[in-house]
Image (cartoon, rainbow, N blue to C red; front, top):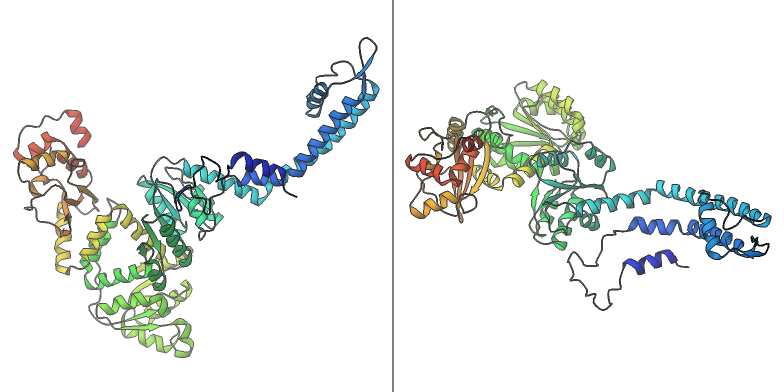
Amino acid sequence: MGNPLLTFWHMLVEPRPDEPGQPLPEPGSPESPVRAVPATGAIFLVLRRMRVPFIVLILVFSISVLGLTLIPGEQPDGGTEPMSFFDAFYFMSYTATTIGFGEIPYPLTIDQRLWVTFSIYLAVIGWAYAIGMLLSLLQDRAFRKAVETQRFARQVARIPDPFLALVGYGEAGALVARTLDARGRRLVVVDRSQDRIDALALESLRADAPALSANTRDPDTLMLAGLTNPRCEGVLALTDDDESNLAVVQAVHLIRPGLPVVARAEKPTTCRRMQPFGEPTVVNPYDAFGDRLRVALRTPSLAQLVDWLILPPGTPLPPRTDPPESGAWVVVGAMRAVAEVVDDLQAVGVRVTVVDPAAAASEGTGPEDQGFAHLAADAVGIVGAADRDTLTVSYVDAARRANPSIVVVARQESPANDALFAALAPDVLLVPSEVVAREVLERLSNPHLWQFLQSAKEQSEAWAAQTLDELVARVGEPSPTVWEVLIDEVQAPALCRSLAAGPVTLGQLMASPWVRSERLGLMALMLERGPERILVPDESLEVAVGDMLLMAGASGTQRAWDATLYEDDLLAYVMSGEAVSTSWWGRRLFG
């Protein structure tokens, strides 16, 4: 037997798709019926679970009203006449709801009072049964999940600004969420763990982030998170499960092609499987760390420059490492997990010996074996990347006992072991979640800075040292603010008007708009002109409309630079020394 309440609800809110005036939506559009997101699950659950209690209440009320219409009542003139259906319905309505206005329209007879007494107790039983079922429903996990899902869907639909869908709120996801929120980006968060979603509710974020605990591999979850919402500007797949991240990449490519996706993948096979689906940005923490280690060994000045530029503005300049010039390295870990690190070390001519802890017992290379002690004594560095932190610590400790001067690079798997690795004090520490978060933020916050860093990694140590020294001399040792500016009518209207009258060099724009004889503490890191990319362009270079400039400057210089590009009188003063008409308030605003 069907549920009449559900049937009525479907007829009320869901018109037939083949009715006149109801065109079928295009496949893949937000209105498409394919795998539609349930928007009324809680209502359906109430109608389904409360069917019997509703029927019981209706029967109790109907029987009570019917009895009053059949039992004769005494009239003022001495005659007898039963209540009308309206009077009986009205009387039972305020009696069953415990309001009690008295006996109407005339005082009741003994027979009527006996029937009302019976009806009152019958109504109490009916209400007790219905309320008990309702309380049970409110505690039902499925009902609470349906209500939570509907609330989440409404919150996502009401976000007025562009937002990013963050799938996975682990260590990396939490770091990314906090940083993006501080930069004013809106987020929608999905994670399979309810505990992580509860932890998000305790975060002191500037803007509310709708969050849902759900299956991250289910495309419906992405639909709920706003995948088809036109204000969704990208998806971040940062779970610690490669298959879940792959499922997100596939769903985004098939449901909304062209939407930017940044995905985490720790296995090289997963990276390759992701690429055909819209060529997403794939972040492999071990590949990123191996690349960083390679740069640190080959060009330590470049490693120092890269670390400095991606640090929050105002952070002191990190020290320059002094890596060993030659010698063998020992890498501890399963080959499938350390393959990227081994490849990067071998790319710079380093001889590498891999110690697999799983085979250590048979090969005599356990942390307490003499075979490993001999390897460590003859090596200049060790990379500890076992699958368990305790095993990594054991190997690092054994290596230091065999060779106190050995360079230690360690990978920390669990964030719970922060104190342990702080006491271990490796020369370089890899925390995969932090590596992922840093690379994601680099690519999202300033794509041109990411391009600059990738191009800089192909440069020589001498170039890196000269660039770093020049940048420090211009902006000081606290890490600079890095921003990009497009020379067009929106971001640089005054400069565009000046270029129409004659050439302007990059160096001319470096003067302070308040005191022309003083130079702004900034430097151009990169200039893009069409397909051409120039690293650290010479200040004699003439700028042109359409150029994209990547700038780095000390605190406060960005506002002065923007004012020069925007205000005609300030640009004229910088170019020729003409008097500036900017008011006192304007100088305080841009200064």
